[in-house]
Length: 386
Image 1 (tube, rainbow, N blue to C red):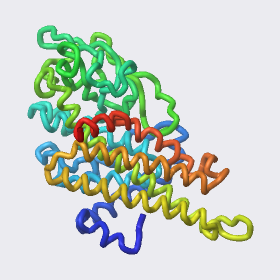
Image 2 (image 1 turned 45 degrees about the horizontal axis):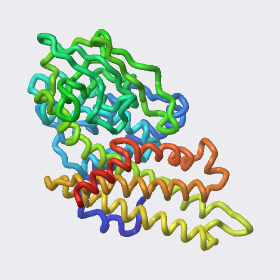
Image 3 (image 1 turned 60 degrees about the vertical axis):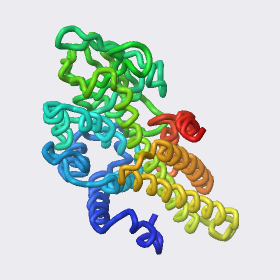
């Protein structure tokens, strides 16, 4: 949301270079995404070519090593890209376009030079699509007890099991996959890179969801998949720690999505309240509406500032495990309320397909579940404050 003092409020976080990037992403979204969002939402998918278009402009290469096609940039460059892509009004679409953002970091941080050349570079350049495989049908947020097994047989791991709710599952060429290589619990988990053309790999049809319709989501299955040992990321049985590292960036991204969801809902509500008449005057003529809008704006401002502050500390290398968990929970609590209030302001129209607030309300629901549920966030926070 643009306000009269926005340049003053956010100049401590965003430089002129950040704003130039913002304009480039916003222009791309207006031309290549927004006009087609309704069509893609109804189709429950979007053209695979969009991954390549985003990559060609360098929007998914920020922060990765230059020798593998990456470009210099900080967390706020990544924030700009996330925020402006989300302005298309379909966070599900953005989640699929950004599936590399949760599947490549373990390779970038712990992979071998050969793995980076083979699996990092082509995703950055848009020639391959990458997904993350952690969640399982029986486990949900209980990552430490995942069941998919990888049994060492000579130079290969024999992988059996399944994953569900996998973003970009139907498009992916490779999966950064959490598997059990050791005993029970967190200490027996490893990360493997699994090519989706591996014999024994299969994927379900598109999963039908409450929201995030344009997000390409599926269930994947492993039936005696032979994966080369050289595809092990980092050390065997250290995967749980890599997952925990990865979750921090994912939770920041979900907080950003929640804030943009709130922002779009507030913008639509302000516009509608000015234009809609009831009982002979605009909705803004009613104190209850004005106060509701004031509360929505206040909650969003607080959440956005908190999220940016946490991001700034992460950018400076300060550990923010507790704080990013708080930011995600707070941003999702705010977006829950703001999207609810937005649909209330719209009345019956807020319940109708074709109105942005209806989609925002549906899409918002997953944000406090994905990347670790609200309850898991509270467990993390409580352990760090007690």
